[in-house]
Structures are given as structure tokens and as C-alpha cells.
Length: 361
Image (cartoon, rainbow, N blue to C red; front, side, top):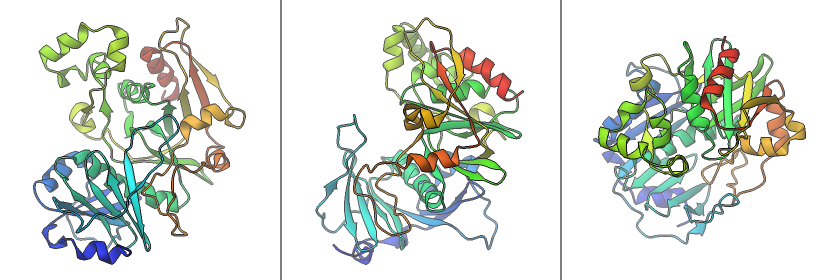
């Protein structure tokens, strides 16, 4: 298999009879699929769906989802090298002329990424989160090609203020943002990926329509979220040791509109402040926020930067072959107008709430 057309010729694209459009205001992605995938995606992307009225607005990408279809024959797959410290195989790829096939090793899902077509096929209904991620990848790719940088951060906004929160995986950025959603008037922007770009009017940020996936500890310690758990599960979790609860990996999708109400999601914001969580679970020190200079703190900048991954095809058309070094200077240029603060001491989400009151007063 050498060409995108070779892949496309072996798939039946006529089955994708339903359409919906996901938009972040700045980016529009058209999705073609069939039922019941269409119903699932309409529910998932509820806050980001464009209405069905005819429009001449162009789309930035068209994703086709082909349930149950497979390649006529498997190509020679190349393992994608993951970030340092992550050793299990997750993705493999096979490059084509002006395109790439990506295989999810664990699930068998396959994706075609190219300017000609963006296709997801395989056991799609059994792996809806990978379908959602592929849709959001098109938003990230479009922004990245336009000069935005990808940050590993959650974010929320209110008025002319926007706050992003980064940290090591499992460091509490999602829990922090959800705690700050208890502040009146705040709106959720993104949970895990944030695009940033410096403009003449200051730094701007763009989120993706990805619902938070949270662990039981986040749910158990937030009264607004507790109804997500059954009584039996809540009691079982409450009896666990604090450290064991923190380490527990049991993801739950939190649908912002269903929990916080209408109008609490907004995918664009001015980026005025960036917090990097560098606190310690077992510390007895009070939680503090310290101003930081990213030009002097490569460790904090490293927590912010995020690779575009194996799906990204840059303007020169050459896909990356693995985890290539990120351009720290590019991030410093985009974040030059943003106040950066390091969160140190013990983990205290009430302290985060109080600090957020100062940001969004």
C-alpha cells in the first residue's frame, strides 16, 4: 500500500449517511457517520454542535467514521516512540504518499490522516473515545498548522480573564478546574489540550470539545459530582485509604452541560494567567502560588508543552517519525504576555478555589 487512494478504494464510504458539524467558533469539523454513532456523537459534542441550517461557512476537516471496516491487508507497521517514561505500545503507523495510517495497538482501531481524507474505521462503536479524539485531532492539527502551540493544560474563563492549569499527568489539573467551576460566571474551556497563540491584543487560547475524564477521587470530594456514583460505589470508595484512592484509575466522563447547566462552556478565551501544579501529595506545607519566569524554568515549561503526536502532518507534508524535540522558544514566544505562577506545597483544592477568586474577581 503506497497511496491514500489504495486505502480509500478498499473501504465503503457510502454507509456514512448522517452528518453533524462540530465547531469551536474558529474551527469547524464535519463528521460523516451512521447510526448509532451519530446519536452518540450528538450527545458527546452537545455544546459544540453547529445547528443544521444551511451555511456557506467552510469546514476545516471532514471526518468519516466507518464502523467495522478493515484494511484489505495489513501493511508493515512501525512502532510510534512514546514520551520518555512511557513504555507500553500504544500507536503504530505506516506512511503513504502524502498520508499516514495509524493503528491503535490495543483496540485495533485504524485511522487515515491525509489532506485527501480523514477516516476512522474498525471497532468504532466499541471505542468511542478514540473516535472523539480523532475528531479533536483535526482541530489541533488545523491550529498547529496555523501557528498555534499545543499545551497540556485544562482551562476556564470569565469575562476578559482566562486561566490555564498544567501539571504532570495525574497532578490534579482537571480537579482544579472543576473546583474553580464553582465560582459564579466561570466557563469551562478545555480539559487536557489547549492551543495558545500571541496576538497584538495579548495571548489567546482555544480549547477542544473534550469532556473531562475524571477519577473517583475527584468525584468523591466534590459535592456537585457525587451523584455520578452509585451509593454502593460511593461507600466503597469512601472506605479506601487516601493514597490508594488518589492512585485509582477508573475514568468517568463528566458532561459539563449536564452537571453545571447551559452556557458553562466556551472554547475561546484571552489567556491571562498560567498555573503549573508542582505540589506534593504528602507535603504538610501550605499551598502557595509563586510567580515564575519560564525562560528560567525549563521544568515548568516542560509540563506545559505537548507533542502533536503521530497524526500531525505539518505544512511541509512530512509526518514526524517519533517524539521529536519540541521548540521551547516557540512556546516562550506565544506565552510572553502571560503571567505564570508555580503552585507549590501540599495539595489543597480549596486553596486553588481561593486563589481563583482573586483571578476572577
